[in-house]
Image (cartoon, rainbow, N blue to C red; front, top):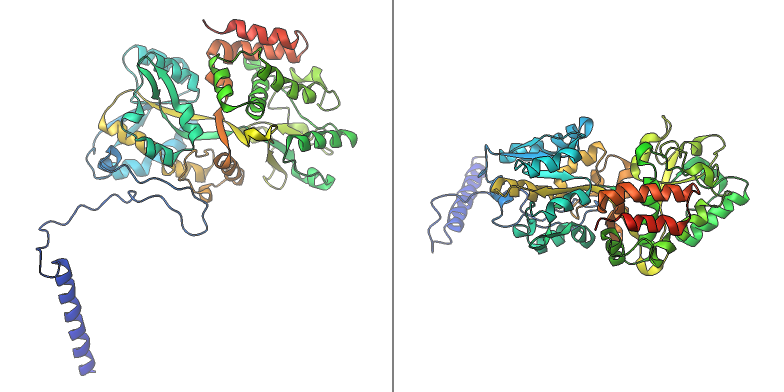
Length: 473
């Protein structure tokens, strides 16, 4: 035993000597007198453990403000942020940024509230904007960009970094026209999906129906359900003062499936008229469903008077009174209580129409813009370009990430996980068109004239001409 201990001690001495020689470069160069500062743990590209479905993230920008923040250079600073989050959403947001605040010493002071859309313009025009504002309506942000009030984030977020973090469609949507020319007006942090068709899974499976993967198959399924003596679609667009917005979503969906993303962008900017062949064609595809009384519960006459939140409920009667409902992922909060996702209900992707336009996805979400250019504000905004910034929110439910470096395994809600995969794999993404248009159109004439058209008060040509006439000069 003594000999063994001596031998082990000898080996230990050899190992120690070897380590000393290695640290000194084999005796050729002295070791540094100070240990190097450890890099922030997130400087490496974001990757996932084996089996996780993650995109390819970008390293933290070398020498950038986020790297400096993790090194403690901005400890004790405060970044103010305003937006529409309130109640439970605000709690989830604040929980999501706690880890960042702890690691950097930066305090993110979120104001928030339902009056954001009305108040943000007053704050900016009064010279008292928040450092960062969360805009759920890019058209509202565009107003501030055109005034020259918004910081161009591409001045500190390189193009190759942004291209690694987002699909091109997201970057296209962030480009806006400032007095000095086009700028990157903000970054995307949270999204929700619209291109979804919901159905009663138990009844659907029991009937032997097949999920359609093309528009022709969707129309064939519609006819099959009608031939079986049932009503295929649950549709309602009543929403108080906002009646008609659900129709505008359908038009946006079909525009993305029948014309190019470039034309869609021109349309939302007023450069492609409503009374154009492209928009007329999109509406013609919709009315083949909406105006066939055999296809819609209550027929065409009931659409404008059926509340959008009540519209899907008949799917869950026994037997179902209608079978399909197109709506964003928020609609599940209007479903009857006690239903289990993927058991009692599910969704499929609203199929494409023209194959040359691939599989587009219509979204809504939050774009974060910067009004005050300070190092700690840049650090916070760079942090929001990374999926880790909403990881806990994704786990808790209520947030879908637009970032390439997200991991699908982070989602606590199986529905949101599937929607995130669809958005990630889409050929292009585009924001809700009415939210991109001037308020007088997107939340005004577009809703009003489409409602009048659906209810039969005016014809299609008159509706589209009315909307064109309302566009601000």
